Amino acid sequence: MNAPRYPRRPTRQIVVGKVPVGGDAPITVQSMTITKTADVEGTLQQIYALAAAGCDIVRCTCNEIEAAEGLAQIVPRSPIPIVADIHHQYKMALAAMEAGVHGLRLNPGNIRRPEHIKAVASEARDRKIPIRIGVNGGSLDPELYDKYGGKVTPEAMVESALREIAYFQEVDFDLIKISVKASNVPLMVEAYRQLSEVTDHPLHVGVTEAGPPPAGLVKATAGIATLLLEGIGDTIRYSLTADPVEEARAGRQLLEALGLRERKNVDLIACPSCGRAEIDVIDVAKRAMDAFGDRKIPLQVAVMGCVVNGPGEAREADLGIAAGNKRGHLFVKGRNVAVVPESEMVEALVEWAEFIHEHGTEAAMARADVEKAEREAAKDRSMLLDAKGDDANNSTDKIVEIRRRSS
Ligand code: SF4
Image (cartoon, rainbow, N blue to C red; front, side, top):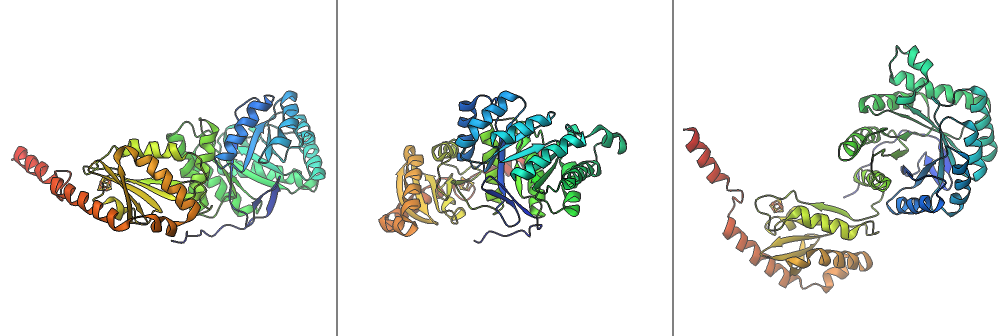
């Protein structure tokens, strides 16, 4: 099935390092290191893990001179572009540029003196380094906060971004991307909608301080996905209280789920389990997910609880396995291809996935004894149907009991 395409709001394009953002460039995933930037080896280790998990651009804090010195060593060794995060000290922005970073993030709520903002923008212009104007609902310029009635409103956040753009324009700097993040999802969604009406600079989309998963994942997804489906957003970040690798993974998975990026890793689907399940589906799916990890096998792989319905329900998957009668029935595009002992289901999935990735589906079918596999699956399917019938959840018995009790 071809992935649906959502009409994307046209934006200008900028380039962060070698990664284009905006225009017709693929939507990118960002994350931020949580190490001390002065810890060069520790930070690089995290950056490599983030890149492996699907992160395209990474941000590191530059809050002190040691951090800027660390960046000078990190930048040449990083596999992905580095953006320096600047809050209160504009001099740290100058130091980060000296260190060779590929981008800056400035918070207009924290650097407010026009001459400081313009000094940074002038140097960024000369060095062709893009800057993200990172408005944050929690650290809005107090003057704007007062102007909008002591409240953080979408209008106040957009005005903060526009004021910063105006300073940049005074020094002829336009390598800009913008974010207007808030931890409140409806607020950030509205702020981005309004912003996208008044500017065509690329937008960096995120829900700030979303919190720990799973609630943080839900909040971030609600905000980011809503905007992406409206065609708003050129680069995204999940701000989770978790290992940043989880942020990168979530960002990547969201874009793949929406059909906005090519699949890179295994897309593991699994049935929710029910009374028919012949295995602990949650455990097998988790073990399969761990076994595939961040390996670059762009296939959809299914773990299904029973051979009665599993192969049919997951017939669109590239590969899958369904349990029955203490055995695992492997299927490729809905066709049974092999039978393995239940204890070897995960290993068999990985082995077949590797084979298909390397040699293709046809070669996988050619090495299979399809007739035998289908015979065995039919045998286990009818055995399970005999044992559990059509009513695996015993609904009929339960209804009889409910009626008996209420009569
Ligand atoms: S019928 Fe089988 S495949 Fe479908 S949810 Fe139940 S156990 Fe899973």
